[in-house]
Image (cartoon, rainbow, N blue to C red; front, side):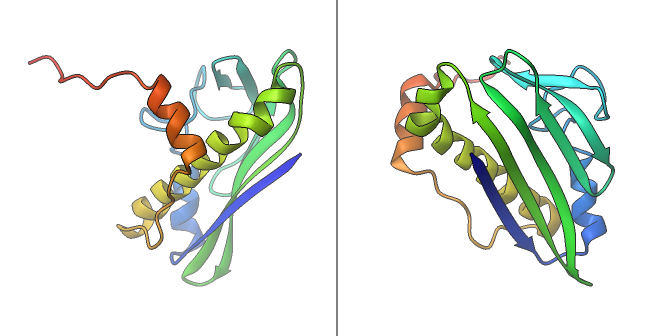
Length: 157
């Protein structure tokens, strides 16, 4: 399967590229065992990957580790479209294995799409201060999220 999402953002590519370096930061979506760089290992739940390419300001590629329910890679990259216009692209090229053969088309695909759309919203917001066309979660994402989401509690004083 190939899954690609992209967003054109009206900023220079170097500004957008700086956001790639924050992917594995304290508030970033990547959870790695060390700093963002080739050889770092991370993942979420049983989906594990390693950073196989990192070009600061341009591209991050993560390949799924043996035993993961996906075989292949996903990457995030940026490219200039002009002086003050750039594009951020997320690509997933993978083959589902085991239980993911069933989960991907029924649930995981839609959740993945929503998470990447949220990531692109966050990038646009960080780069420009706003999101022109915010992503909206489909009912296929909202329902499982509502069922499995932990209740929100007030922080301790």
